[in-house]
Image (tube, rainbow, N blue to C red; front, side, top):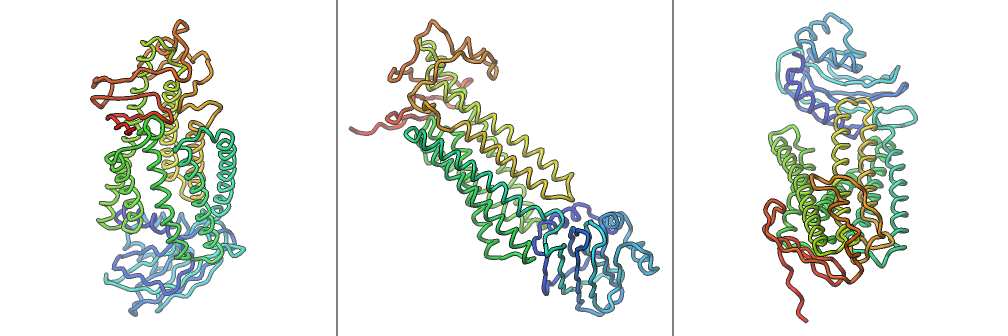
Length: 473
């Protein structure tokens, strides 16, 4: 077959599509295969290509092909011997098919909008050959981006503006209720600002590429480094929220920090390194590490979130048994927060899987996938921001929520909230009223053997899984 291993073809196409430079000077490629895909580019009508290729050996059995997308797909299904036979018979297979004699120097304009594939075919003996390439691909109006990449600069500019609007809304909310903020709100503010900076990096990089046709490597390294830092803060924050930090825990233990930080670090490093070693055995190992890191993080988030939900449910039952109306307590508010957080993450994962599925189907217009990914990130932050934003009363500390009738709905296999947590005959909780301390060993209810949960206030100490030493007076 022309290309025997379809997996290798897929990896090559992935590598080529992810390559950003559209102007190459003195690029050297060494290969001993029957066919080698040099690059692919989406041209608008009137776009132009310049291709110069030199070989380190004088051979007249090498062919250069410039094929449209449908023509290239047809070649993939053909035997290499038949292709060479058709070429020697001058049978038209592609837009351009020229034998090396001894070099290649071709300039042409695209007659219609389509993707073109540039490749070299060896129709003689198999040996290692080195090519030196000088080529330029450009669309009308000096646009060096491929057909599926042209909207990227505008895309990042628009979404950067939307995130700036979210930042203004967040600051207005923070200023209105600034006396009730906790550490979590400050961290969410940092992520919001960092996301805007990240989008600015991507906009600058794609705008530079569209004007110059090649990457600014200083900008590329700065963007990659910043992306790693941002991803570390982002994923760490998701795990810290799930663990209950700043909501039912004022701080995390050193062991918990390691359980959060090491998997996130493993995820980021394997994700970045895999881009550079994807075609090697080391890249395959990195891909396995990446998959396990994702699995661990997802398991951690949902396991700890469910753990905190069950813990708060148990405390609400204890509060009811103590004669206090549970839905009037801040414990009920915290319980609702974790439920909303879990729902936001669930929809985020579902939408991310949907976007990944679209990326397999949509090949021609890759910017649509980029736009969908940005929309999914935006939805996640709006969901988390709306869940944890400050309100007229502090859901996380002592102030009780307004007294309202609870929604009559089921809750993860438990009885209905109305019958479990609400009873008009019980006493309404008021600020300062002590709440029952939970101390119980129940393996079916909780994954830990002993759990301590108290009402969290600025002066109260709280921990989940072990006691916090009290400060000496």
